[in-house]
Image 1 (cartoon, rainbow, N blue to C red):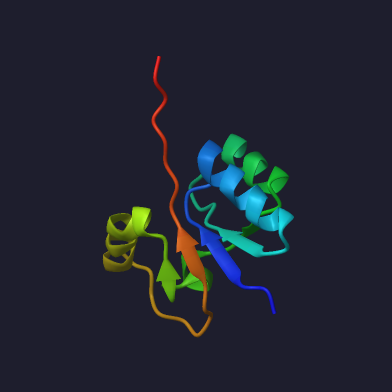
Image 2: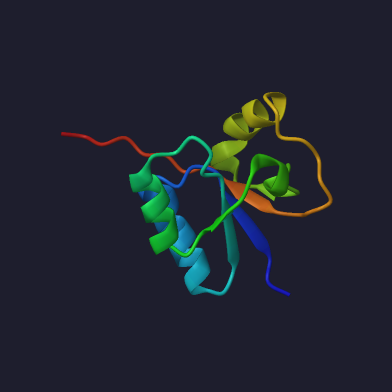
Length: 96
């Protein structure tokens, strides 16, 4: 059974990570609540599966670069569910 992975923010970097994971057969969940049409299209092109925060639930593990963000999300409404997912929040800063 392939793991379920959640990429919380499907921006340019998150969608790229999600697409790479989907390329390798993983199911990639993402939260699209309140996201722009551009972000929704990006997630769709990356073969990410839209899911609510409740469906995603808290992760059983997550990548070290997103610990602070996940703690914040857990404090602000992600509730435990039986679904087990690995979560990642990717962000980048454009330089000019």
